[in-house]
Image 1 (cartoon, rainbow, N blue to C red):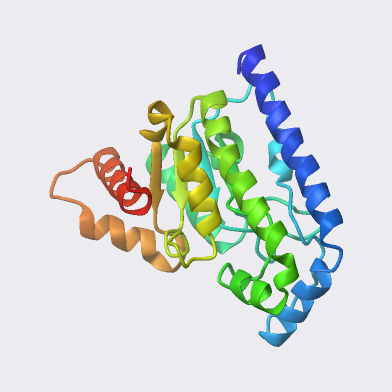
Image 2: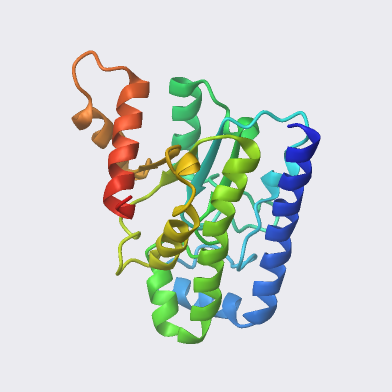
Length: 243
């Protein structure tokens, strides 16, 4: 990164860290609510240690780092929220993502990617954010605000780092999905930024083989990986954002 990009990146990174602290202060009952939800769903094989997770991997980047992708995942799961971890995409889905990027794209996402989430609010599984909100509607403002803030962070990082964006997960991006506020905010953020919007790609999750299946079904004979990735990512982008 050149000095200007590094200064801009550290400002965004530090702003993210400060926002997490602010959201935690506004939701003192969040950890208890998350623990109650986990018990009710039989997910009580772990303890809630970090209710809202800042990605400490961002602190590993330096002015010498070369960022090739910005990856947007859903929200922190069980491992990501552990007090001694607090890093994104380190569970099973993360390992699958890491292996694909290294094997097929020659990218080490631990050193050559910036990973953010649609929200830093933890639940064992993403779909459980809906249940958390249903049981504790008072948490709604923090959950929605966190999504809108994280959506605005995406084009800021993209412009700063001059890297394309890989968004993982489509099922909750629609008007009734738990990430509807994120979709709305991202649409607004890119409305007048067509120069950046062209490098925004959407894909299914690596978990449960969804991405691999989509890739296999959509690939024409002899088509290169870069071509099919571009076509699938752009097609999903048009369907979700209509732009």
